[in-house]
Amino acid sequence: MYDLCDKPPSDERRNFLRLATASAGALLLSGALPNASANPTPTPLTVLNPAQALARLMEGNKRYVADVTKRRDLMVERDTLLNSQHPFAAVLACADSRIAPEYVFDSGLGELFSVRVAGNFVTDEVLASLEYAITELGSLLILVLGHERCGAVAAGIKAVNHNTTFPGKIQGLADAIKPSVSKVLHAPGNLLDNAIEQNVRDTVARLKSESRLLANALAAEKLSIVGAIYRLHSGAVDLIA
Ligand SMILES: [Zn+2]
Image 1 (tube, helix red, strand yellow):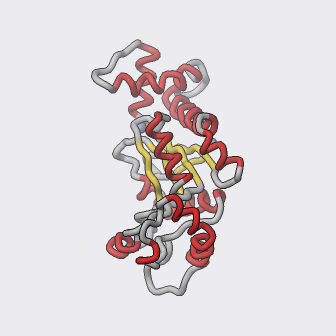
Image 2 (cartoon, helix red, strand yellow):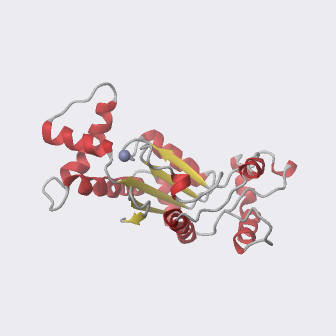
């Protein structure tokens, strides 16, 4: 988040302006800046490479954990984002109400492209959303965020261990998690914790292998895909993949 207060332009903002100049043509072609000439105000932040995007996310998480989050002027942020968006990172997170990516990474409007589904696994729609963030909006990072005590993964375990069936479309969620559960069924340690981590690793692997668009961005070093676990009590995000 660039500084909304009274400071001179930060390095981050100068970096963004450089990037904006370099990428404006491509973004215009993509339709991401439909009215850029009418509104020269730069949209908030972006970063220059995937490593910087990850560092920025983790710095935000440190502020969240320490309860020293930034003060934000959401009215200004809304105004600045009227005509375009350049989220520097995409987050594929569980829909669990205890996890809110913008809070977890102390981010403002326009910074994160959040895709959420219970169990944070890949569907065609999830993949399409992430492809859009990377290829059209210029996001540089996909972070797959699992979390402790995930109910969707617990459902997958019940489906594997007890053949439990679930009503409505919930069965589909459980079925989607079952392959990850099966991989760690006899591993030492806590089955739920192990399955949550395996599900994140499997999701990262699928994102890397099932999309030509994402593979191209990875090969061009314009994208990193990483996995992490959110700790419910501390709020910390631990990278695992
Ligand atoms: Zn969950």
